[in-house]
Picture 1 (tube, rainbow, N blue to C red):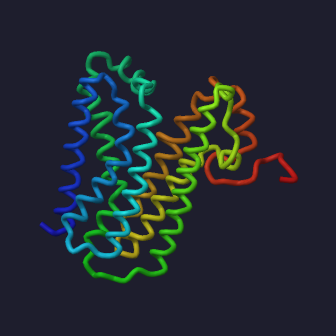
Picture 2 (picture 1 turned 180 degrees about the horizontal axis):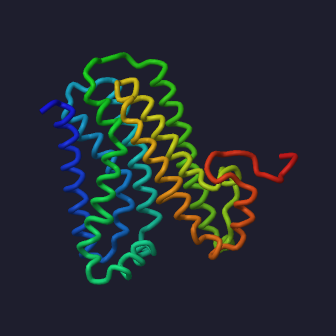
Length: 264
């Protein structure tokens, strides 16, 4: 087998195994929500396995591994702190109610291994670039990728922090967050996430992984149409009537000045 095939197969087996163990714990706890904080850590694990299998590590491989770890571990810590003590998320409660007694084993495939497959596919640019052994020096494309990554990381981490601070104030209960970065985009964290993965893709492209473009595209589609913007806003106006006005004046994804607001 080629080094790339060995790397891809190994990372897939590892991530499926780790998610299976996490699933077993979720069955014991009756809480499938524990899969959410693992999302970022899963990417860090994939990068670590790929790097371990492809020694010596190139500068580009090390850069990709470090950036992925910083992004993934920050996200996991944030989600773990946010979800701690709140019980199972309503999404999984709805799935549990719909699937009944079958949920305990169906969740392995529809929740845990599905997440494993998605994160493995999205991380393909990193895996492919790590395998590259041409030792090409870092250049302008890497610099552009790092810049885009930093922009995305700032939007995501600052957006998460601002929202957490907003929710911490009891007087904001039931209100719409429209301050800070949230004044310019309704989802600065999702926009930042997309920028992070396009930035990593640009770095990986410099390492010969240009053909993995479907991976950042898949992440962007997920953020916009599946588990991100569309899912979150599907019922939010029912819970927060003010959100309709917020939607009317604020971009959904790409930041921009609030509509109908002048002189600011």
